[in-house]
Image (cartoon, rainbow over all chains, first blue to last red; front, top):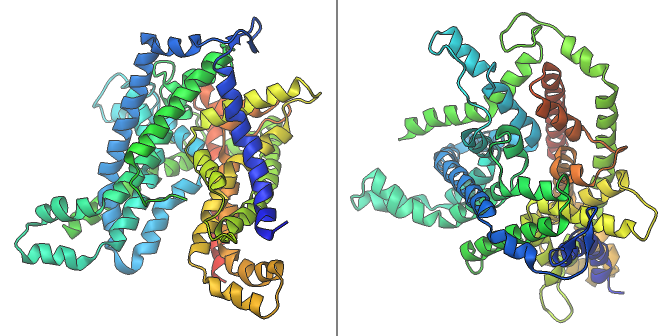
Length: 274
Length: 258
């Protein structure tokens, strides 16, 4: 066997076992009937997909979309100036960049828990506001959509900053000088020169943030409480407590289809992640 | 403009880092409430006495080390294979790089649920159960794509003619890989292993679906504690984990520089 094929075989086998086969099973399960004790049974049916159109799930899909979109927008707005700051900080670039990457290396779960600690009724924000006499009753900061969005922005901000930084770094400064020489105000330069040139970075960042936010399970479960149910939570529930695997499979496929469509819609020819 | 950005950056960095600092500070608080009452190590003692926590931390370490070792070796070989041109001149295996891409964009919850479905289906024919082995297999699966991406990025800046020179001088194909290309890849392989280790040791969503009763991992125990509400012992565990991972990152940076 050629060396190249020999080297590719173990990875190919692992991808078949851990990705291709599981997704194939999900596809099959999605057109089967739920068994009496969980599991799956014949006959074949498309009922699991028609159930997706039930308004109950429509609302959940829309909410998930909305929350992921808002979180992505916040990441972009908060991340862009930060990426710009890093790109323009000369010799300290690497230090500032590692300060953004560092939280990415530490546990996502623990960073989510940190916000539970800060936002709860007896948490440090409410305690401080009460001690200062600004509020009497604790503010309901935890267990709502706002807390979920905050947690997602906190968790995924580095994913936005890194691609933005990569494009800003490559940006030719003489283009900005040219714009200024030709009489553009700094704001015009930003809107009409810098931002359009950063489009690839913005696209990459938006994908890297939006896709995981859309399927989020952990953040909404911990920070949203029982009030904020998103697609990820419904999928998890179908595969565990509800024991309705066929419907869980159909939901998973719908979630993946949306993610794929978005990727193809946003991706430009010639831009490769791999 | 410049000063505006700098002021903004201070706030942005505070947003990224202060929450964890507060968490760490209050792990040394003698009160269980968010009011500072004095320094105490009682929550760390509580952690040290919690057998369940320690056992899960041990499981997490075993899983992360084994999964990282497998994913790093298999992923490095795959990246090299994808980089190497075919005889026919076409680019590497497209379905394999496509499935790597798919693995990176599949939502975690879907990965976990589909693996669970596969394992349960296989268990119909074999007398096996969920346990450490299923968790390790799942972890190898989702960290493989990360390893390939990191190693492939380094290969892109590698001069192909070096390998050709080795072949011209009589090296075997494997010899050229092992003695010329592999040494060049070492920093990327180390970075990829670090990445695989951190995603493995931190994973909750996929692990919770494919773990058995005897293979609870640290994130699973942390998650269960967090769902029950805030608990200073959890602050102590979190501080230890963040500190441990931080040390590991600094250590690997040092190794990379030398």
